[in-house]
Length: 233
Image (cartoon, rainbow, N blue to C red; front, side, top):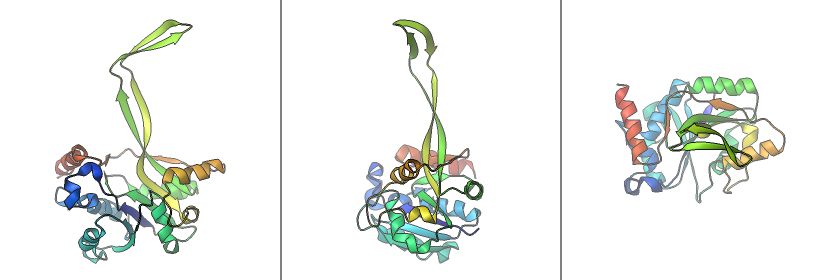
């Protein structure tokens, strides 16, 4: 099934300053190409060629780099946020581009990943649900011995346990009818949209991403992504 990708490329990248004073975060280079081009190229591997970019801060630079997408073999349309609209709000500007039963990717524009988008799309289609959340498993080791206490006494000591937890990857698959629930031109987040579905009794499945993924929140993350790209050469 043909699929579009919506990429959020309007953030100010405050944690990437002073670099983002000059270059918008999605255009920061990871090796030879900017973050956003790596993401588009990965989606192209899955056969996705229609891109809707939500722009805001330094939108003119993003448009100047990608144009209409012809130079990189895709189609690109732009939707400008006159004010910040959150992680779901920009979709309200694109409602006429997406039919009710159509699936689209919604992706933060500051991610470097090697996820198999074609596999994730098939997973979404097989679930027949309106929202799929891509998730990443993280681990964190305690620096301390953790006490389990029962009736005021130690029942067990666990030395520096490892906690496993799941975080949102900033990658979602949505059906068009979910987008229709987003208020127009209003700050609205994906957690709010997911809560609407959960409160209504719907299921929101997760797709566990096992491939390399990193959210580029700071210069250290950018360096980690660069090491990954250079290591793959």
